[in-house]
Each structure stands twice: as structure tokens, then as C-alpha cells.
Amino acid sequence: MRLHWHRRDLRAADNAGLAAATPSDPVVPVFVFDRAVLDHAGPPRVAFMLDALDSLREWYRDRGGDLVIAEGDPTAVLPDLAAEYGAEKVTWGKDYSGLARERDAAVRQALDDADVAREAVQNAVLHEPGEITTNDGDPYSVFTYFGRKWHDREKENPYDPPSADALVDVDGDALPTLADLGFAEPEADVPAAGTDKARSLLDAFLDGNIYEYEQRRDFPADDCTSRLSAHLKFGTIGIRQVYDRTERAKEGVGGDRRESVQEFQSQLAWREFYTQVLFTHPNVVASNYKSYENPIEWENDDELLQAWKDGETGYPIVDAGMRQLREEAYMHNRVRMIVASFLTKDLLIDWRYGYEWFREKLVDHDTANDNGGWQWAASTGTDAQPYFRIFNPMTQGEDYDPDAEYIKEYVPELRAADPQVIHEWNECSLTQRRNAAPEYPDPVVDHSERREQALAMFEHARDDE
Ligand code: FAD
Image 1 (cartoon, rainbow, N blue to C red):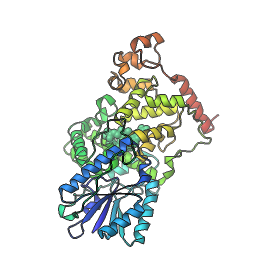
Image 2 (image 1 turned 135 degrees about the vertical axis):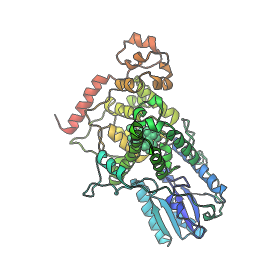
Image 3 (image 1 turned 45 degrees about the vertical axis):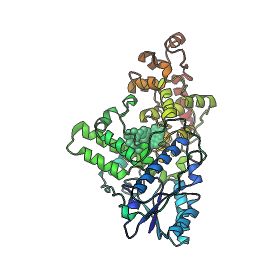
Image 4 (image 1 turned 90 degrees about the horizontal axis):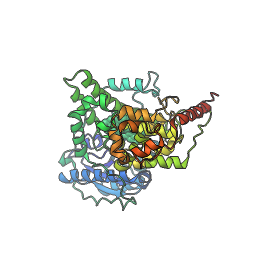
């Protein structure tokens, strides 16, 4: 008998740990609420995770098994559970962040001390850190080459879920509530979790939007992306399964439609690129990946930070994004890029404040992707936006939300305003602004001035003066 320790793989299908269970070597699935991990989470993520655990538990119960729920330090809990159930082995899916690796090393030691075998399996990515390297064996710091190899490499097929006779008949305890875990109800409407929900999102995406993904993915009002991010973060659906379905979606399809599917697959590759960056440079969680000659002298003004968090900057596309984040615990990718550029290059606030806010508010917060996205926008990351390429938030709004549909959805004060006025808000006179949208704020900074300041800030950091 074996235990499978669920972490970021809250699913039964396409789970390499569970797939190894057989009627003669059955499995007891467990989940451990670990305070050290919960302390890094915000309410939306914990709510999503509880929902995902509930669905997973149902899956086991429908087949005569159950999910064992425990709480505490896994180095103590897992050897105890192994002893309680007579398990000879513990399996889990590998996690690549620095903190997770430290914890896993301690768990391995604890299991070795208890004489329990253990195996960490590949369950979260198609290609693990260290698998796709330069010809010299070094990690890639530029995505293009990584991406090319990632696409060319053969991928593993998805695994079947364990059969009912490979599950031990156990009784799991009740799941804690958000309040039991010390979390308030999320401010946002958190999307539904669970494998069925992830599959239905994938089915709907493969039914149409994937074939226009390349053309439409940057337009937030279209909302044509997969919305799978939180599911991939918590592993309610397996990455092998997602990839396999997209490969099948390519069959018999050519031209732009085929390229669109490939563009979607490239986003899965970005996810693995950032996983590799985090693995090889665990310090990126707190430090710039790219070092400049001098420290970057961020201004870090508290009031401007608050205006950004509240979606009250007077830059419509930025405010729409920040309000979507509060309402849905999600933000469209193009808009994440815009608000991140705005925080760092218009408000001159250190990316770490933005990352912290996203970490608390996003349901899909993933250390590797969030950090990668922030350091890209701040020009401090690997393969980042060059420091002199500064998004103009007004032009971005006009290019990617020309009819201001997305903006109007999240910023009701602007609903009656003409899209042209919205896209020229920073150039309108005070009277024009008051007439068009009396409740909407004036711009908190002047983009052209701040652009110059940002350039000077980076040039000083580069020692270019
Ligand atoms: P789709 O477009 O359908 O993409 C499919 C999947 O590919 C996503 O679910 C995600 O797993 C992956 N993906 C897509 N874009 C990227 C990318 N640029 N980098 C890495 N992986 C990507 N993504 C997260 O999953 N968690 C985060 O915490 C996160 N924080 C971000 C912060 C900033 C500042 C920026 C600019 C981007 C961030 N992203 C993050 C990447 C991206 O915005 C989201 O993955 C995407 O918007 C999720 O929506 P979707 O699932 O519909 O994406």
C-alpha cells in the first residue's frame, strides 16, 4: 500500500503518482494543510483550493475511497500517516520553487528516518527544469530558443486515473472551511474549481476560441483565452492532458488556425520557461534577476500605490484591469502587462509591491509566472522588456480596447463617455472630463513626464550618465 500526497495536483486523471497504484498496491490519497504554505496564500486562492479538494474528495468517494485530510508539518504528518495506514511508500508531484524544494528535502529525510520509501514524480510540467538546456547544458535565459526546443521535444501521454479497486476504503475527515483556516471570505467572485470545471473550460476553448487565439488573445473584451490558469496552478487538470487535446485540435487544421493552436501551446512553454527560471534562480522571488550597476531608485509613493490598487489612477485601461482583479481575482494577460508597466514605469514603484498585491488577489497566482510577468514588465527579468520600451497606457487602451468595452465593463463611471474621450482622457481639459464622466478621477501622473523620469531612473541604474 502507498500514500499519494496531493499538493499542486488536485486531480485523479493524468496523475503520475496515482497511476502507479494497482489492486495489489493500492493507494490512500492525502492532503495536508500546512501553515507554512497557507501563510503565503490569499483568500481567493484558498477558496479555489477548498473547492478543488471538495471535488477531488467526491471523485474518490464515488469510487469507494476517500481523501484523507490532515493538518500540520508534513515532515511529521506523513510518517505518522504512513504508519497509521501501513503504507510502504509515499508519492507526490514535484514542485520547483525554492521553498517547496526545501520542504520536500525535509520530508524526504523524515521518511527515510521512518524507513518509508518515497518517490517524487513529474506532474506539473511537460518538461522539467534541466531538461531543456543550451547545447552546453546551461539553462536558457532567452525564451525563443527554449520555446523552439520545447515545441520539438516529444511529450509524455496523459495517465489514466486509478481504477476503483486500486483505492483503499478509508474514511477521510471533513474539509476545513475558509474561516477554520483563518481566512476571510474573498472580496472577489472566485471561479469554480475541480476537474469537471477545468475540462469544460478546455472543451469550450477547443470548440472555437483556440483557432483564433493568435489574432484575438490581446483584446480583453473578447475574453477568448482558455481561463485555465488557476486550474493549471492547482493541477485540477493535467498539463499532459491539456497538451494532448491541443495536439488533437491541430489534426487536419492548417494556416492561421493551426498557428493559433501553436501560439496557445507557446504560452504553456512560457509557463515552463518561468518554472525553469525559478528553479535555477530561486532568489528571483525577492531580487531582480538582472543586475544593474546601481540600485534602481524607485520612488515608492504610498498614495500612488493605493490609487493603483484601487483602480483610481485616471488611466482607464489600468483602472479597468485593477478592478477586474478585485472583482474576479483574475486579470486578462494584456492588461496585466499594462498595469505592471504602469506601476513600475509611470508610478516608479518597485515591482515587488505589485507582485505582493497580485499574490494576494489573483486566484491563479503562481510564483514562477507571477514573478516572471512582473520582472518582464519591470525590465529586471530574464528576456525582459528593454527598460526604454515603455507602454503608453492610453495607446494600449486604444489599440486593444478600441470601443472601450472592457473599460466600461469594469469602470462604470465611464459607461456614458465616448470611447474617444476615454482614450484621450489624459489630454482632455478639466471641463471636458467633468462633462464626460464627473465621477472618474483625473490622471494621477502625467505619462510623458513620468516616462522621462523612468528613463532617467534606469539610465542612472545602468550607470549611463
Ligand atoms: P491563456 O492565454 O489561455 O494561456 C494558457 C496558459 O498558459 C495559462 O493558463 C498559463 O498557465 C500559461 N500562460 C499564459 N501566458 C503566460 C505567460 N505570459 N507567462 C507564463 N505562463 C503563461 N500567469 C499565471 O498563471 N499566474 C500568475 O500569477 C501570473 N501573473 C502574471 C503577472 C504579470 C505581471 C503578467 C504580465 C502575467 C502574469 N501571468 C500569470 C501570465 C498570464 O497573464 C496568465 O497566465 C493568463 O492571463 C491566464 O489566463 P488564461 O488561463 O486564460 O491564459
